[in-house]
Figure 1 (cartoon, protein in one colour):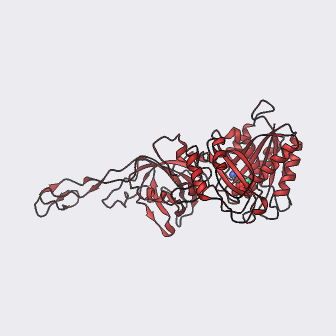
Figure 2: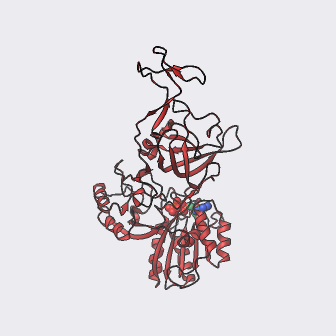
Figure 3: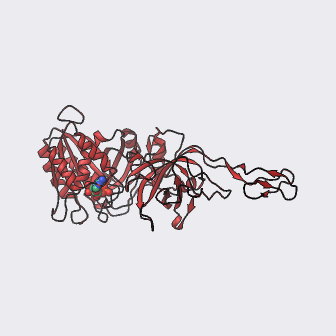
Length: 465
Ligand code: ATP
């Protein structure tokens, strides 16, 4: 069964979209007698700098057509629809004759599955992709002027070939496309009908709208042929939601299976051991009070499990020489302004809270230190244990006033009543957070991030909708 994969067809300014090119290609393959059994929309490393938007590649699983005929049609179609005039667009086509849904051909090679997994977490090269494609007899090509376009899309395309063997969690996106000559104009979609349709489909269909901000999340802002994309766990449910939306004419539609909404980019990590541009899930302890900085971004400093318990009444301080004294030891987390109300949950954390944080790591140089600072762009976190008390200066049982220090290691004393206390006491505090998972709202969600409403988390969830 030929797997026909394409990537890097669009431009940031002129629009287009790899799913659209693949949809036109699927029509051509079917017109040539082929049957498109499945369409995959595969999200890859969101940290890749040369991506246009969401770093997606597409693969079509086709029967009743030869690999060579599929390859020729794919090259022609990609040439016809890609924005090859944009020097940053670098289209690539890869066709592999492998078995996916039947025993019709060899299985997806382990090395190709492993390439797909790495493409989500590392930065790979065209050379590695083409070497792998050659080693397994895949047909591949750079499309357009190969002097300026190295066919970088072959990285994503080889990864899309390996995706079925690399990822075990799949969701659906049903995409409706605009009439082509309307591209670039304002999309005419009735927001009320989107909210009503979203309500009908929820929770099988998710991230259609953001009820907190009132945004219609399923309608893109960028130029290009997509009118709306409906995401969910079930194809029929996504199609019903799409059908209930009132809008300008829908030109064509396609349903993709996708690794979106699965957290496939996250791996377990440890402070001090994180890689730039990879996604991690890390058990940590809050070491410093959250700070809202210029631009509205909320910063948080964290230490490894078993560290970072506040040392003073002031909540803002951690032990001298503790996990944050050297930038290389502490982890910085940032909840960016666009994550909106999620920042309130981050701000509600206190030193000593035990949490699991998830997001993409960026290594930033630190002046005067050889080790870079690890910064995690927060996507979600789980509260594992909350500090319910803070150590405070005792109050006098006689006059109810705060005692004063009686000197180093000599406890506290009330100057008026002469009562004494051996040390600080635990004062209960109110916490607005509960145990369990908190996430960014739908409007701020990365394609690959798993919405809490999908379930399967290891603690209670507080889904945003
Ligand atoms: P589109 O809307 O077309 O899907 P996009 O946001 O997916 O746009 P592309 O134009 O496809 O962005 O650009 C992404 C480029 O990055 C492609 O050339 C792809 O082959 C390449 N790529 C994907 N994953 C990796 C990776 N892990 N390392 C290096 N390059 C990658």
